Image: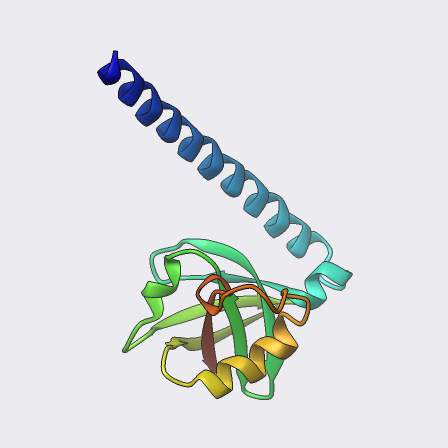
Length: 140
């Protein structure tokens, strides 16, 4: 009986994970299409498309400050930007930009300062570990 319960739990977790992955991919595709079709929309003013070297594309919130672009990443894909980082392509309000992206892991003052502007509505009680990672992109 215990083995059936464990097997059922594992199966339910796998199906739930697959459903979440499908939903995320579907939502990301819909947001990407909106950004391309409506580059001057309110959504496009705060969301960009980033394309990684391997071709994966993600819509993410961004903050541009001169020759720097900041983005916050929730989930584990921030690891793609560990030293030395990687080149990326960004689609921001109808324009394509090239840059080099690197995750910020040891500058809490910068992270706090940027996230205060990038994600001003994150609840104060939320632990920093759940607030995502900051990635800095230097434009080329």
